[in-house]
Length: 350
Ligand SMILES: Cc1cn([C@H]2C[C@H](O)[C@@H](COP(=O)(O)OP(=O)(O)O[C@H]3O[C@H](C)C(=O)[C@H](O)[C@H]3O)O2)c(=O)[nH]c1=O
Image 1 (cartoon, rainbow, N blue to C red):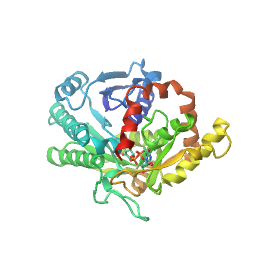
Image 2: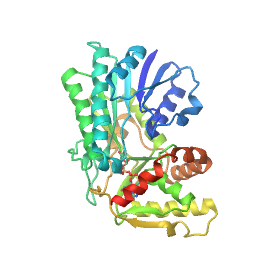
Image 3: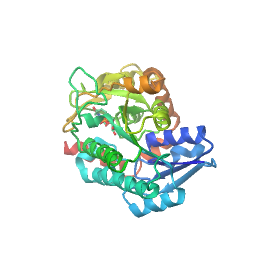
Image 4: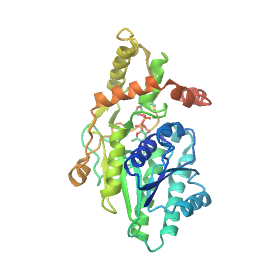
């Protein structure tokens, strides 16, 4: 039996990866290691929590002793590392939190894997899930490829770039069997409503303002989270050790166009007169250091591993909206506590 440890498995992307692995690989021993911070939620895994091949361990990757205990208990052969602080706006107000989790936490995991595996690394794998933001910002043309130079602009992307470098350094220095993927913006069910799409769905439902940063002409490449989970499965099993693969949706949208599309779809789902939600659009002060455009070239993973997105944006967005509208309790629970005051504070500071 293969023991696979997935960090951040209670989070957005992580929960889709855990679900996929638990359902597809009955003979694997799947361990979800998660600190259950504000964006981690075991509700995301209710449907699989009683499966015999699923195990949950609450631990913070910053706590090396706690990580060691989990490693000694479950002796993972493979590690899929998704645990991270991920929200760019939060990184602007609290960079150190990002250094702790994303840099220190990653190095802790690498060290514990090295200690556990010793010289016997041949059947092992350390897989780091990263972001296209490490490449910085594009102009109006061009795409990020696996050889684009790192040029991070936000504390978040700097912390992810640093963790990528550490993972590669452990590959070079200790011959750890590593693999890295850099993905574009994900969307889909279970996404914490601080990110653009779920925040705006939630605000439209509640007739609240839709805060578009700056002029709204920023571009992102959107990838359905379920397609991303499938890509992670493919890279974990078939990716070549030491390689990087970019994972994107071939699906670029300017924020303002995406927001207008979302408004129209939501008006028709909610039976509201056309234009109601667009009336909620409010241009607010820009995010400092806001990257203008991300766009990813996923040709390598397509040509070498046969992965490409399978869900169209229209389908994925419709499924996402339906999920949020059918899971109002989930949304209410995750937006309780200090969530509202956190956001109000952020806008005041801009
Ligand atoms: C929350 C929010 C965002 N925006 C803009 C800012 C961006 O241009 C775009 C998407 O923002 P969001 O914060 O959802 O995502 P990114 O900053 O692109 O980063 C995301 O995608 C990458 C790949 C990761 O690696 C990050 O972890 C993930 O958070 O909408 C607004 O205009 N208003 C808002 O209220």
